Length: 586
Image (cartoon, rainbow, N blue to C red; front, side, top):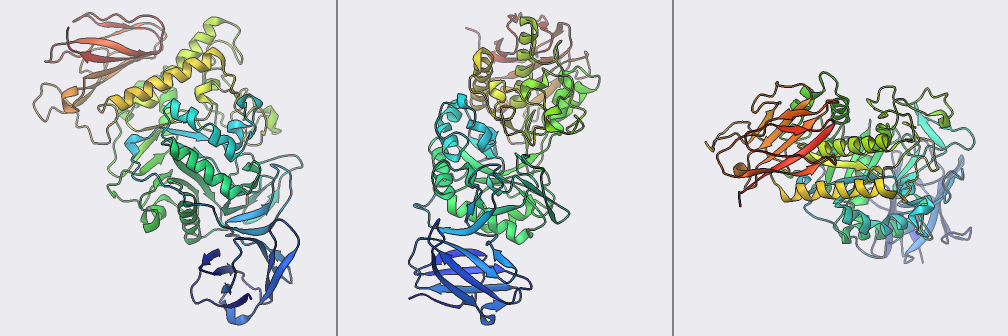
């Protein structure tokens, strides 16, 4: 027989303790309340329990339901003002259809089938991040799977990501958010009929619960767990993005992250919003080994665990300006290339959801957001984009070739600059959002990835894999340590140096520059990354060093061959990146 008793501790939500279930909820101003238990997924009441004043401390109820052997049930708190769904429920019932407008009806208690494996010890220098929207990732029929737009669908693509070289996925909000409303100024405002907040930022949410409409056939919790396990089997860490609103306190936000870590084995978190920050996550002992991403790292300390990543779009805009050949673009890139901070590593990306896709960046000079219903007034006005000679779909092979070259250029700089590379899902497929640089309300082919990518997608994917392999094979490129730009060991050249058209002179030339890594400092071959973003061919000298050998081009973004002769400047094609390695003479 079940009965309720006072519990002296406090938690929010519901958790098992032996044959008992512990409950806790904060209900300010509520004096008359009862807990109602239901059979899972039905209106059949199992039992109800009045919550007396002795179970209450301040605004919070804290109690133990004794003798509860069931592993699954639904529940709700009934008050004179109406029913309250536990805001900290690990699962909820309702909103099974994306954009359907149905409310969350009840909280759900479900015990997961197995303990989640955790990828331990993931360090920032091992990472290549792939940022995806669970629904948009596989919703298009070209994904050729049954479980389109779901956690199960994402799991089906885990091997694809591993073959691409991905070592961590960042999931855009996939907790239970209400895509038909937004919370502003403490109030919830419904969107116009038929509109959705596709990304989930700013929507009222149940931050402990996985999103029901992202589940294929069953409860969202077990399916989310199986997705995490599928990624882990492929050696891919799972990072979740959270945008906490003002309904959450910092303490409650951190408890929510603990839940995802303990229940599902999530490996890291990207925290944004005004409530919680990276410092709060870093200081929590349960989250001590998690990867932490944030655009605000104030208060974070150097904990020597190499798990802090700074997510900021400054890097993206420096790259874009340089690729356009702007006057100050080269100097900004030279200054930013080897950025070092003792506390964190920089997250390098050229595109995310707030702007053009990577392919659209070189297909459109201006935004085309008419589909959003705001008269094209929304979205960033300044994108530093370049349509390569024609707005929108290309009508010539020459334009298509230049666009492919520009995408390769920006990918090469993203992967080779000091930091941790990340791409937005679909950028390796040449995904287009049809020039929409703010598709926040587009639940359609604008945001759904088209997996039928053709030659251009195949070529970009092959290029990404080549960059990933190069980073893995060369510690000179992928180092978390500080480079001094001095020859502190008297090897005959500094560990790292910046060059212009002439060796050792960074200011020489116009839009050509190079970055030199002296191999002896890294137990590696010497590497020279040469760039030319001038519309004309330029020449650049390769560094002369003590060791005998020859410079050989191993990565280039153009089809034209690059010839190397000792002591003669190398001709760099216009708008190109070429990577040279120093090989011993045969």
